Length: 63
Image (cartoon, rainbow, N blue to C red; front, side, top):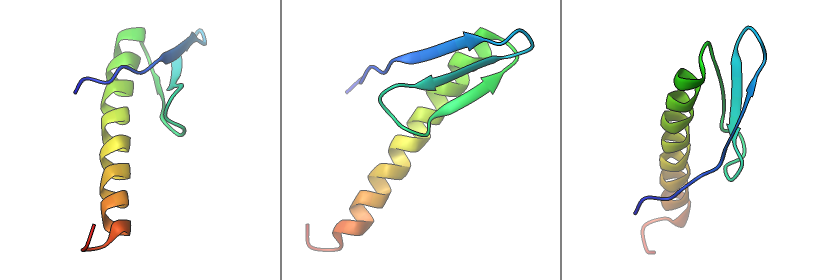
């Protein structure tokens, strides 16, 4: 499944900052817009995998 997420990005002059609306805590800062979008993609994947693993661990063995 290819979920779509909304990236909010802002040019701060010396860098670009951005975050993913649908996933709290996913935010990045990079020198260029392209680097920022790449970092956000990697970071949201990592956050979702961490959340998935955490949920499975919390469920225990008999889910």
